[in-house]
Every structure is written in C-alpha cells, then in structure tokens.
Image (cartoon, rainbow, N blue to C red; front, side, top):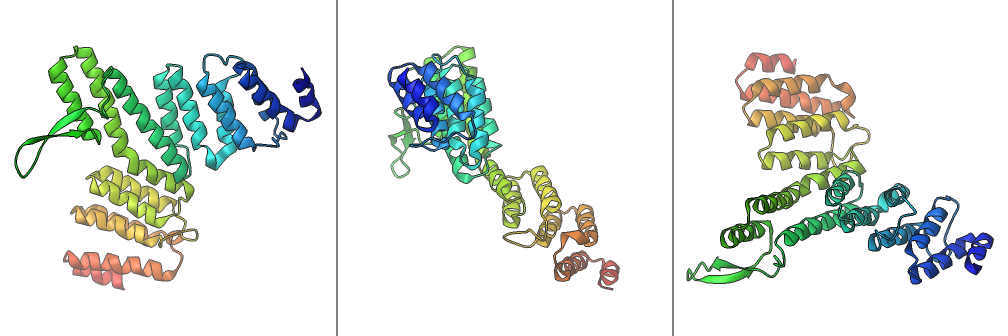
Length: 332
C-alpha cells in the first residue's frame, strides 16, 4: 500500500520500486501489470533505468513466467516496446519468440523470428535474432531426438592418411544431417518421427542458407541507395546459380537507387552489370533491352559522364558481337 501511494506521488521512481517489490514477492502478474500500465504513458521515465531497460524487464518477466501473467496482453506490450525501440529491438523480438516457446506454441515462435528478421534495420539486431532462431531450431531437433544431445554425439570420420576411423563431434548442419541418418538406421524410429526430424533438419539447413540474403536485406533497409550492396546481392544470386533472383535483384536495384542519394558507388554501374549479366548468359536480346532502357532513363544518372559511359558500353557490346552498323549508329 505504501509503495502504491508512493507511485501516485512520484511515479517515475515509485513504479520501479513497486515493480521490484512485487517481482521479489513472486507476484509476477501484478508486477507486469504495474510496469505495463506505466509504460503506456509516454511521459513516464524511470529514474534508475531507461524506458528501454524497463521494456526489457517486462519482456524478461513475461518470458520467465508466461503462465502466471494473465492480466496483460504480453504480445501487444512487447510489440509496443519494439515499436518504441526502433533500432534496438533485437532483444525484445527474441523475448517475444521465447515467450511463445515457453508457452509451447512453437509455430508462433517461429513466425515471430521470421517477422523479426524481415523487420529489423541493424546488423546487431539481426545477429541477435538469427543466433536465437538457430538455437531454437537446434533445440527442436535435440528435443525430437530425446535425451541425445547432438553436441555430444560422436561421429566417425575417416583419417585421410591412414584410412582409419576417428571420432568427431557435430559441428555444422551437414554433420547434424549425417547424425540424423545414422539414428534413423540404428534406432529405426517410426515413420512419423522420422519425417518430423527430416523437416526440422531441413528447416535448419534452409535457415543457414538464407542468412546472407537476409543480412543483405537488412543492410538495404538501412540504405536502399547502397550501390555496392546491390551489386553484392546480385552476385550472391549469381554465385548460387539463381538467375531469377539475380534478375530480380538488378531490376529492383535500377528502380530503387536514386543517383543523387547513391552511396558506395555510382548508379549507372548497376545498369552495366545488369546488361553484362545477360551477355554472360548469351541472352543478347535481353542485353539490348537493358541497354535501350538504360540510355533513355535520364533521371537515373547524376552526370552526363555516367550516361556517356553507358552509351560507350552499349556500342562496345554491339561491336563485340559483330553488328558494326548498329555500333556506328550508336556512336553517332
């Protein structure tokens, strides 16, 4: 009662004291309700902790005691903290996912991780969420395997020099898949369990494969006019022989980058790389279409020199492929 009266006199300090008292008294629902009500007020500022730290305290309390907290909508309040945090929301996203994990709602937790990776705008937040997501998927696999810990399981590896078998531990996803196969052969699990394990291992593999693409998306959300990152993104698709992805990346790049806001490179190099991509794939018709579009997109160049560079590359392309009449007309 005394602390509640103190909250009315000095809410900034009183709320923190009351929250700490209720938490230590294991009255978690009341503690969450008190702090949530205070954080709803945009003028509230803690004296010992920042609003961000208090949001984290509320999230941590919800994660640790998901079944005891019933007076507030945990999902709504943590999302409120995420909106307020903006560029420091990684920990709150992880807390929200862990809340659903501890509540046994695993698909919802996975949805939260996916949403978070598509929303964050800093590499720091991305790293926090991705690591937690990976750990979540690994834990799901471990759980399916029962009491067997994949990190402690020893696999046999042939030594190149002698051909003898030596033990090794699981260190990466491919090792985990090998372990799964060995378990399937030795323990002969039922078909349903076998399929569940296969799905979980595939999810972890797919998550690992998607990491560089998702990281690229985060960097481009920070600055969509980052020319170097657009080139890097397109090369990533090319390296993995994903021609559709590469075309989409270049198409989006030339539409998005403003030459007056371009960073880490000049915008006209995207047009040239796009055309070069088609030329390398021997699609001369599409190459010409890119050049034809590029030379009339005057608003995509910061200077006449950049436009001239595109014209010269266009002419050299026609020269390389023996269309001398076209080359001459372009140079005129």
